[in-house]
Length: 484
Image (cartoon, rainbow, N blue to C red; front, side, top):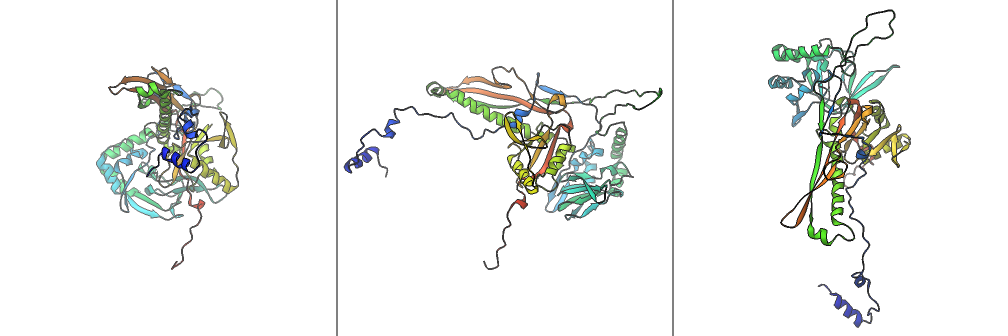
């Protein structure tokens, strides 16, 4: 049973403990408390929004014009499995460069049926360098390493491939194609293999496929640079008066366009609350402040994860690399930085930054820090490593790290927005009064418009498969003795 304040007073009086002055509990009824503004745990540093150079987009659309490129089809394959049996999704075979744009589902399904499933143990050689390509490899699960001959004996690591990657597609259009590297399983792997003989047999029986491959070979024979762009003919170091080449710079006929995306919500505030309870703090202003913070958090999440324009999904597949051993090592970050010039920032989940720190400690390395807008942040090779908790961590405790060059003048990554909106509250964010309904509730539409564009493919790179809970960091669990 609860005890009332009067009963407590009576008990204190009977026991000779009557108060001799006003209690603090009673005094608070006449006092004005000192209070904080409403707090919010969701607010983060939002470094991505701070470091992106924002470009004004009038008309809501930004077009990225580039030189004409012949390089297509550098995608990844998708697989399905029934129990232990794995099969490549037929339509995904169009991600192979020679098959890009081929849409005959029956032929692609027949091609998928000809793949044979193989499993390899860690360290086992899958193919040997400088031998004829006799099969096309599709990595369904696991990680493989491409090894080349070292200058002083031994092997050099040419790259790491993982789930969805493929090898040997050059054999689709060339009978003389040879393996340019030894491929070795780094982990236990499931690989689907398409014998070249079975492929040739299908090509002979499918006129549409043969015509498509002939067109691909014709397009691939056009002059182009190592990046697949249409070549600009020049000569140098000549003497006399030789005829000079004529040239022109060709452009893409269908350049990519980025439309501004929007994050919105409707803020609702009762007029009674706004009228009677806005001292000492304005209730509407505080409600609006926290709503804007939530929208900015969502904005950064979309810039990282949106499937249409987000950084994780729009990185060129040739700019995506895998860790060599799982946790992010200095070697992995060096490889990531070497893929582009003038990397300005690296974005990583805080747990990935901690994992990188552990790897540096393991090697006895002490990365320096750098100053950025008045803040001291960790850095590697002078490139700031900025925390971003919007980069997801998978159920197997793996994540990604993003490296980028920024700025339109440097052909980098840029943020897109439009300012000067009606009833603008912050740049590119507007707050519009909508109505007061029959329940005396005011409605405000809060909107923020944004997107992000990658001007050239090498401006953005991603280190994938970053383990943040590497087993080597955990203590060994003792095996219980029998009978214990």
